[in-house]
Image 1 (cartoon, rainbow, N blue to C red):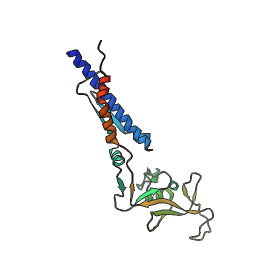
Image 2 (cartoon, one colour):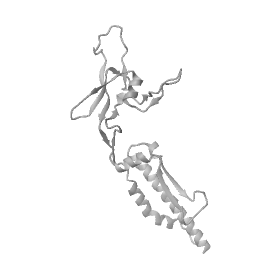
Image 3 (cartoon, rainbow, N blue to C red):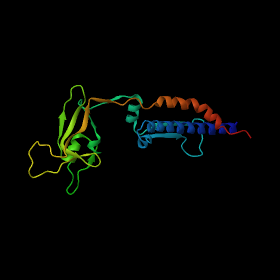
Image 4 (cartoon, rainbow, N blue to C red):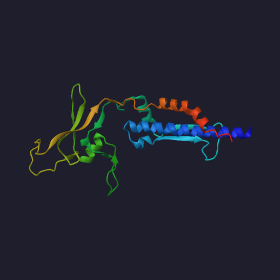
Length: 216
């Protein structure tokens, strides 16, 4: 009886481990398949109990979780994202570049730190004022006047001239859309966490049977 119990403990522990790794792998693949990148995919983690190598138990368990639970939940349920202050969400265009500049004043001889891309951070980075353009029945815009696009397609400030009439559009300059303003963004359901979990729970008995040591 002792030997049979030990065999059962090994089989249960091995089966639980395989199911835990399988579910974690499926959820990571869902993230990558949705085009959200490997970095976010790797936030899916799995813990197995007992956690020490060579230790088995009839009460083995596995736990799969995300280190970015809010993001995972939003894409799992397909919830809309709204501005926390009740105004607009500012969606940057390619012309906006990749980051803004912090409003926190730096120490002496230090540069201002980078921050996520916001209209205020963009203005601090570029020194260019954004202009609001209302469009009835369509998303409103924040645009930059009298700018040019560099080789990377990012809006940059035109070099000032000594003699220049105010309001005149200079040669090579454009008015470029920097942010699109929308009241909310619907993420759409990208993940199926419950479906993946159900599939691996259904496979668990077979995984345990396969892990059972062969009778000598």
